Image (cartoon, rainbow, N blue to C red; front, side, top):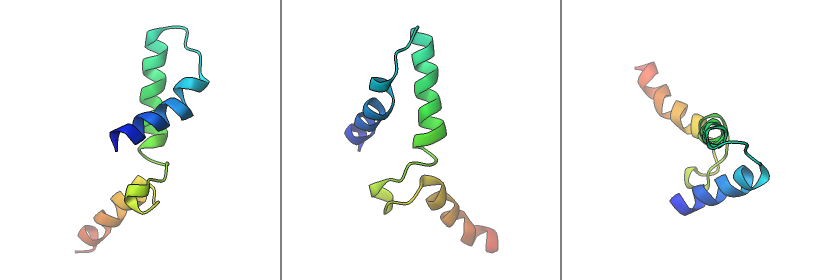
Length: 65
């Protein structure tokens, strides 16, 4: 899974962007991971659902109880 993540990160973000500084690159990668990859990108390991959908589906039964 880690290899798949880093491949996606490089192909979808890093290789398409020219960064002026290391700090800019670091901030952009963090924004990508937290803002897109972890919340909106569909993952094959989750049955092609978004991580947010899976997370909330686990919380729904707990909230109903």
